[in-house]
Amino acid sequence: MRYKINWQSTPLPSRSAAILTALMIFVVILVTLQVSAKNVTAKPLCDTNCNLAQYGVQPIARGSFYGNQGRNTTTDPTVCNDNQQNQSAFINSIYVFRNGIDGVELGWFENPDEGRRFFGVRVMNGHYERHVYDSASPSTNHTYRLVSEVVPGGDKQWRYYVDGSQKDVWFHLFDAGPEIAAAQERHSRNDSGQTHWWNLKYADVYRNFYNWPNWNRVDDNDPDYRSCKISNTEFWVKTSCN
Amino acid sequence: MKTKTLKLSSLLVLLLLMLAGAFLWIGQGSLALLWQSPTPTPRPSWQLSKAGYYIPPDRPIAGEKVTLKTARSRLPFAIPLPTYLPGDPAAAYLAEVWASEAGADIPSLALVYGVGVTIIVQREIHPTNWHNLAKPPFVSISVNGYSGMGKDPGDQVLDDGRIWHYPGSVAWQVGDLQVTIYGEYPMSELLKVAESMQLQ
Image (cartoon, rainbow over all chains, first blue to last red; front, side):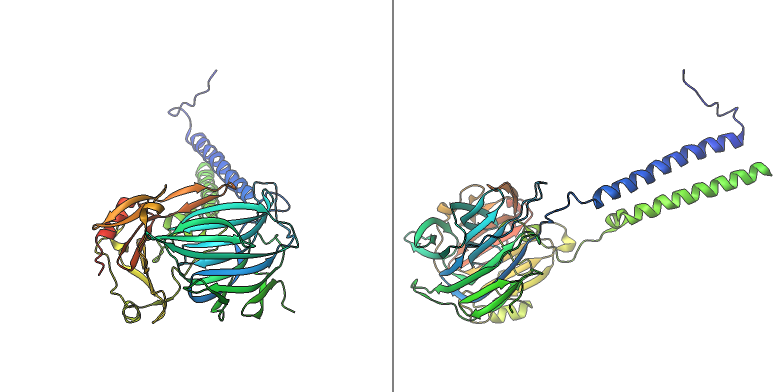
């Protein structure tokens, strides 16, 4: 059985009361939905939310560089994994930047899925490619070297070496970059670990390697870590330089 | 009289409830979203990727933000300005000019336009073998008779499951100048920008 209001015969106060009740129900539903939506967004996913973001500390040298090299110790960092499909990563790498978009990168990373591995990256016109190499043991020292080569026909190649062993050859748009860097990077404030880079060298046009010149600046957006300069060719990344 | 008072008080209660709802809505930022004005210098989204590559978000090249006049005095090549830009004509203005230092080993220039197009010009003394570089998503192109490569903007799933967004781009080389145009536009639009530039 369906109930129907006879609008014509219903007295005015009752009609107003009906409209009012309907509107009040509508407003109450609207307010309830708004409040519950607010609560859902405010609630943390779990107690150890990784809160992924990108933090990095990297000294940068400016000039004309045909290669970059550095030596680094693999550590055993704490890397956040909140079991909510949010996995962080801890990365140590050297770069040759062509500009703010393109470059080459070589180093090691640790993340909960892949463990601790060596890797190489090419970013070309904003397109990203990463190759993952062998696994890396903790507390071991490794030398990373990126060096370019121009071969007949206009092919500009970048060669990726770990401890003298060639891991990759990638074609690229450039053979000399105006900036080089060595970096520590982490993707959550819940990640912790420190970094030691030393024996930093660059390659000149003849592919001879020399000590890094003076740093031009340090790109640092990490609220917890500092670059602790030992010399032009050596630095630590720690929570405090003392 | 009693009925009239009842009606008035009911309407007052209703008004108050509606006001409460409206304040909650505003509090959620919905109104701000509706009235949000465009930023004068749009930042390309691909500068803020969370993938394992640190890109300084505010520096398109190794250099400083300068005026067009200063850039002209610093660089050993004429600055090629486009005569065509895609998007909103009201935003088709040169928002930023970046130039490397005078006498830099690798002279570089970046032009950032209000429509979200960034043009980077860099000296590259060796010719470029575009054929070996133009693998998917890149395709071979020709800009005013010069070879190059380009791609539409898109997303790629990295081997660790992360999503990386890359911009649309068109790159080519004339003599020792390599030019790349970036933007969140189809490659066909960026090609029109490229063809409107005169490189000397």
